[in-house]
Length: 262
Figure 1 (cartoon, helix red, strand yellow):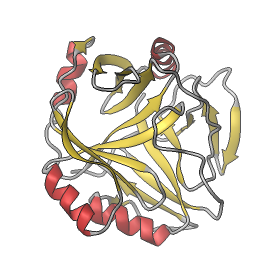
Figure 2 (cartoon, rainbow, N blue to C red):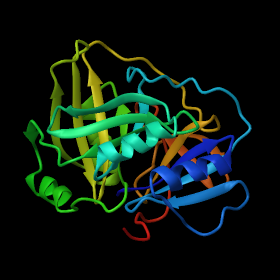
Figure 3 (cartoon, rainbow, N blue to C red):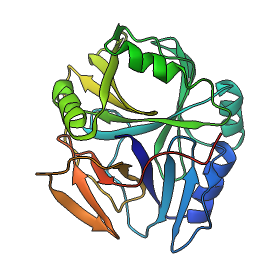
Figure 4 (cartoon, rainbow, N blue to C red):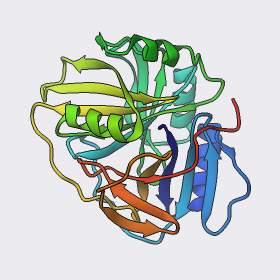
């Protein structure tokens, strides 16, 4: 079952709402209420939630297991990146042609959440699901930024695949190697309908990080219904029971995926 929603905590709801509507062409779903705003990003939503809580322990080195970034497919990446820079949005990685034949850049939202723009169809080094890859490419070039993936760092890619396959129906599209990275960086791609979990592994080893579902930045993702038997509930936020995958990535069970249109 696909990713339907991503919850991001913010100390400045109005500022975050302006950021996503201005720079990611997100469309508000209804009116903001009770410290929350829901934004449509074509294939999933981003939900901004007001928080008064403090510092996040997340760092952008990709060696912490669990959440790493949120990726959006775009057209005209360089035009969009120039607009971000003109607005003094902080970048983690300037636009470049990356492994796999895509153009990418990384930048931060106002809450410290790392975001990625991706332009082009990824050319996998190893294709494991040709039909899934064809379906991914058939989505075409988005008219506005389209939610594409959440990236996770994990200890064991096979175990992560088994977890999301057996419980939520994700299929393994293919793999990509990063030979320029001295840490021994490998990526796998798990897909359900129009959404992807991008899975990072490192030969150099990784470390734990306790999830912080009430701190500023990424809180957790929502998946459409699947098997949560035997999983620990780490917190309850309103009606959301939040679970952990084997690497500490937090998720809940949410409504069906899909946006309001392109």
